[in-house]
Structures are given as structure tokens and as C-alpha cells.
Amino acid sequence: MLHYIKPYRHYAVLTIVFMVSEVLIDLYQPRLMEAIVNEGVLGLHHGGVPDLSLVMQTGLWMALIVAIGGVCGVMGGVCVNFCAQNFGNDIRKDCFRRILHLSMEQIDAFRTGSLITRITSDTTQVQTMVSAALRGVVRSLTFLIAGTAALLTLDIHFSLIAALAVPVILIEVVIVVHKSNPLFLLVQQKIDALNGVMQEDIQGARVIKGYGQEARENERFGVANDNLAAAQLRVLLLIACLLPLVNIVMNTALVAVIYIGSFDVQSAMIGPGTVMAALTYVVLILNGILMFAMILQIFARGLTSKRRLEEVLETKPAIRDGEDGETDGAVSRGRPAAIALHHASFRYPGQQEDVLTDISLTVARGETLAIVGATGSGKSTLLALLPRFYDATAGEVFVDGRDVRTYVLHALRGKMAIVLQKTELFSMTIGENIAWGMDAASDEEIRRAAKIAQAADFIERQPEGYGTEVTEGGTSLSGGQRQRLALARALIRKPEILLLDDSTSALDLRTESAFYAALDGYTRELRREGHDLTKVIVAQRIATARHADRIAVLDGGRLLACGTHEELLERSSIYREICASQFRAGASGKEKANG
Ligand SMILES: Nc1ncnc2c1ncn2[C@@H]1O[C@H](COP(=O)(O)OP(=O)(O)OP(=O)(O)O)[C@@H](O)[C@H]1O
Image (cartoon, rainbow, N blue to C red; front, side, top):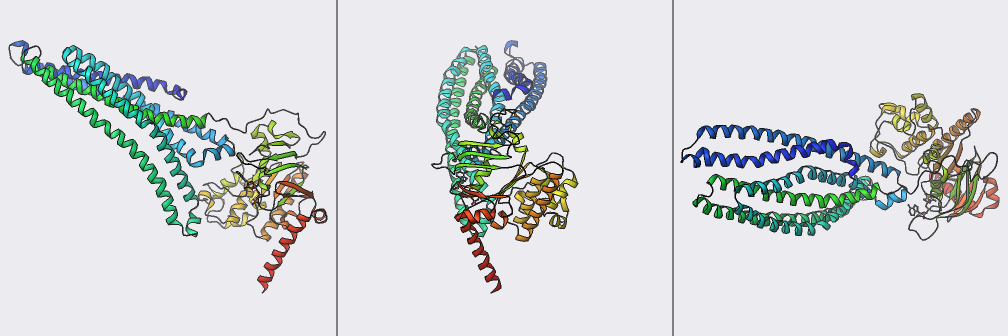
């Protein structure tokens, strides 16, 4: 992760220079104070005659270097923040970029709450670590080394006191750091869990209200929150022990300095100013160690976060670009099918059974294939294999005659537009949501796509038309309105392959058939311009599926039959059953409505 600092190394170097200067100035001050007391006030080398001009001069000199030290401190702070903030900013961006390229199963494995914690809290921890490394480590080590050297120049006895006190404090520090280390990982994991609950509950606020389950969710949140607080408390209690322990050693050292110093003063070996200077040095040295201890804590926490960030940054996306230009794997000579599956099977990671088994299917260019089947029969999963949300675990999937694994992902997905079962909209205007999947869509293209998707009327009734803001997740719109915006967003891309995953389920029958009629018109128009639009439509309703060129019937992950509505009525008992059940449901619905 060090390479993230490289672009900002000049700030890092400047921070070190400023920090060392500030500390050296701090360490010089006790010597000036010693001169003021011994020579200026007590006149030890002038027969006890005070030298007020020396007091004035040294005082002014002290004021000047204090000001210089202050400037160094401020400049060090500015540089360290430039370095640490930019460092964290770059990591956050890379982490987010990596997450966007992870496959669905990898995102599921990390869990959303944990990914959010890693991008936010963990990045902040490593930022703090860099800041502490540049500022705190330099500061504390300079205090320790230069402070000890300065103490040695005063009197050897004082150095002995420091030599005894420093190891004792270091032992205390090592024990506390060692004990608190594993707790930092625990804290981050508890933050993951808390974020997970928060995310679910905020997204599911309507369901919670609908079921009146606020108390239950409050309790679930409370448990996650208490767990986090308990883990944090354990860390803080350990750290809290450190300060009094260090204080005991520090105060003992100070008493020792005063005790030994008083003998030396009495025997006229040194003046009282020297004892004052020694006291200040001992405090500075021991504070330097304490600061170092705190930094070790920050490091322990930061290194835990660094490992968690590296897990994300170093995870290679499971679904990666193929070698574009690869032509092996063409399924047919001449004009290949738009889509072909050859004995494709699929099993979700960690599951025991295949969700799709030995599916072989072709969809010609310009053809419309509907997929029907019971809930859980694998329709959405089959669709997900085409843009490579998942790769088939056996068999092959071809698009335009090429194995999908040989495509550059961007090129493969660029051929398609998919409307998912669950509509995702973004917090931007309606117009921007429609144009979202296309780089530079004109107003005319946006309106046209909205018209085909049967969205134009309701959009124009919105207070600001296409400029109306959509709230987060599209909650300001009805389910049917959201679906129509998602359809418009897909159509504006002018895809070669349109994948609709039960994406008209929230539309009333009249709007749905108006949409399919408009889509047919659009398809004919494209054909006249020389473009074929191939469509795969997952449909719950036979009324939706029956107008497709062919219908594939899935059951338990197997392709049972494929043909036109009429052919399937003749050949497929399952299809007849689905039709009959929907017909019965429709008839009883009408009866209820009439009676
Ligand atoms: N991410 C996943 N991990 C594990 N199993 C999954 C996952 N997604 C779906 N499944 C399982 O795969 C099977 C097929 O699901 P799929 O969503 O493809 O069915 P479907 O026919 O589209 O259903 P529906 O009509 O209800 O949308 C189901 O048994 C489901 O539980």
C-alpha cells in the first residue's frame, strides 16, 4: 500500500523536516531556560550578581525560536494532511473501482456492510496511521533520541534515571499493544455488522413500518450497537491502563531527578537551572515514549484496516475480460445466432445443486424469445449468464457466435441492455436516469425512449418533467413508473440484445401491451435501418410471452420445451398447465370483479 504515498512523497519529506525542526527547537528551550536561571537570575559564574541584560536577550531569543517552532508545527500539520488526505482519497477511489469490477458472488462474499466499512472507516484508519507515522513517529523518536543526548550533556546521573525509566515504560507499552492488537479486528468486524443492519433497515424501512416491526429492528440494531460498544470499551480500557502506568514511572523519574539534582546543587556541581532543564528533558523524553505508545496503538488499528483494504484491492475480479478478437468458438458458419447456449449448466457458489442443467438453446438475430416457468425455475439465472454476471459452470454461452468468455466485458455488455426484476434508479433527474446508460444522449433520444417505454405521459405530468429529481432508490415513483424508466434507460442504448427480466410485471395489462406494441414498432424501424434487435423476455404472464417468436419453458432448471405458443400447447403438458392455471386465475378474477 506504500505506493499510494509515492505521488505525495514531497509532502511526506517536508512533514519530516518541519517536525524534526519543531522538536529540536522544543529541546533547545530548556538550555535557554537553564542559562536564564543559572546566569541571568542567580549569576552563578559572576559571583552571584544577576545579569538582567542576559535575561532580556535570552528571553527574546526564546520568543523568536518559539515562533519559528510554531511555524514549523503548522507547516508540518499542513503537509501531513495533504499527504494523508490524498493518500486516503486514492485508496478509497481504487477500492470503489475494484468493488465495481468484482463479480456478484465476490460482492456477496464480502457483504455490503463490510464493503462500506472498508471504504469509509478502514480508509480513515490507514489515513490516521500515515499521519501518525509521519508526524508522531518523527516527533516521538526525535524527542527520545535528541532529548537523551541533551540530558547527557547536562549530567550523567540524570541520564541514568532516563536509562532506567525508558525500558520500564517500553515494557508497559509492548504489553498493552500486544493485548489490544486482536481487539482492533474485532472492532472493525462489529462495525461491519452494524453497517449491515443499518443498511438493511434503512432500505427496508417501508417493510418495517408495514409490519410494525420497529421494536424488533430496534432490538437487532441495539444488539449490533452494544456489541460494537463492548468491543470498543475493551480496547479503550486497555489503553486507559497505559496512561496511569506511564505516569507512575514518569513521576518516579522526576522525583529521582529532583533528589539527585538537589545533592549535585548542594555540592555546587550544577546550578538549579540545570535541574530545571533536566526535569523538562525527562518529561519530554517520557512524553515522547508515551506518544510512541499511542502511535503503536494507531498502527495496530491501522494495520488491521490495511489488511482489510488489501483484501479488497487484491481480489482479482472472478469475471474478467477475455481476449478480444478471439474467434474460436463460433457456433455456426455464416451468420451466427445472436445467442446460443451449449449444454450450459450453472450452480451458485457454495450451493449443492445446479440451478440450470444442460441447457441448449439458440436465439436468432432479430428473434424474440420468451422464457416462462415456475418461480425459482432459473429464468433470471439463465438471463444473468448472457452479460456474464455469472459464468456457466459447465457448457458454453455464445453471443454473436463467440464464447462470452472471449469478449472484453465492456464490449459484451455494450451489445446488451438489461432491465432487471428489481428496478434500480439513482438520485438524479428523471431525464438523467433515462440517459444514464448512454454517454451523450440528446433530449430527443431521451423523449423517444420514454415514449416507447410508455413513460412520456407520466413524466410530462411531473412538476418539472424530465428535470424532476428522483429520490434515492426511486421511492418518489410508483413501481410501474420505475419499471417504465428502467425500460426507457435500456432502450436508449439501442442495444443489439434486449434482456427483460420480468420487467413489465408492475404495469397494468393495457400499458404492458401498449409497451410491447411500441417495442415491435421500434424493432421494425431498426430493421429498416439495418439493425436487428434480439429480445429475451422473462415473463410470468402467458399473455406477455405468447407474442414472442418462440417460448422456452423452464422447470427445475431444465429446458423442457421450446416453440411457438401453439406448438407448446400441443407438445408441452407443463406449458398447458401454466396456461390453464393463468386462465383459471384470470376467470376467477373476472367473476369476482363481476359478482
Ligand atoms: N445469489 C444466489 N445464490 C444462491 N442461490 C440463488 C441465488 N440467486 C438465486 N438462487 C437460487 O437459484 C434458483 C433460481 O433462481 P432464479 O432467480 O433464477 O429463478 P426465477 O425462475 O427467475 O424465479 P422468479 O420467477 O421467482 O424470479 C432459486 O432456487 C434461487 O433460490
